[in-house]
Image (tube, rainbow, N blue to C red):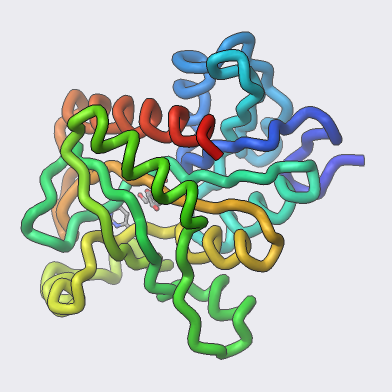
Length: 235
Ligand SMILES: O=P(O)(O)O[C@H]1O[C@H](CO)[C@@H](O)[C@H]1O
Ligand SMILES: O=c1cc[nH]c(=O)[nH]1
């Protein structure tokens, strides 16, 4: 029997899973990086593929946008046998030192989202990634010399509610960027005893009306996926 949303069957999802928000990115990753990719679910547009990377089974599963959708997908992936959940996403820069196309390796995610709050039932908590996955991401980015930043991100619900002024206020607490899924994935990693991590590409500055030029964004995403796949093989 398949779960309600991720309509894969037992055995169709690999232990190691990349999690982009965007189904187009999932398809591109599967076609560009995986050997013999096979679609196991397309329900609700949450495309999921399994193939091999350097001979090792890897899945790439769309989360959709936001922690409510990502948490549903993560729970169902775990029920299907996933043991490593690695978000490959985009983010809006807060810190002045970040440029479009740079990579951000999340060391923790401030949980501004409602899904994490509901799971925690009001408890204060600091969602952090799996330490070994985090270390592998950092090492792989460093080895390749790709511009990258390591630190705190915030997971928000309302993309358009965050203003440049609001972002500036967060910058004083060391926040690098905003995104919309990491905190719930990190929390679920701890709750369900699987490894979770997140690497992001800077797609814009908070408040920009447009994303970075396509070629800059595409090269950042390509680097992010390369780093993510190599890190996946280390855990
Ligand atoms: O590019 P993805 O992985 O979707 O990530 C970011 O982009 C979406 C918002 O545009 C949100 O999902 C946010 O987290
Ligand atoms: O949450 C997000 C994600 C990407 N870009 C933003 O501005 N905000």
